[in-house]
Length: 117
Image (cartoon, rainbow, N blue to C red; front, top):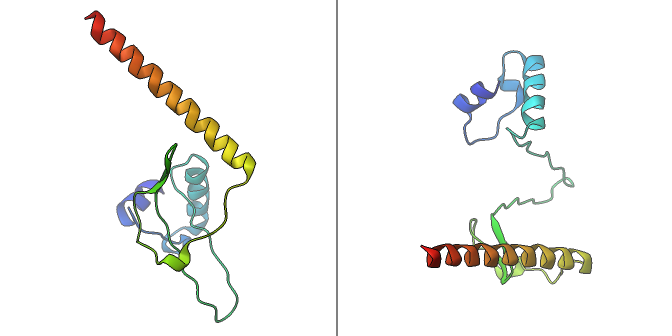
């Protein structure tokens, strides 16, 4: 199943209906999703006659702030006033501190190695 998906739909979404044997495809797709080889695309439902837009982007969560690296520029009215919960902010700060400590340690080790050469 994975090889067929790679050949026919390397970057596009697809449906199980495109496979000749749908039952076999369901089992194969389930295994691929379980092992992280494929990502399911969620089916979204909205109220009748409502307009829906789905935007995706890639962001970097850095100690200095969040930076979007891919995706469209969105108009100002898409901004939010919401802030993460205190628990989430604390967790992000801990992750950033651990990453900074690791980078500092790595730089010191590299500097020490360079000076001893």
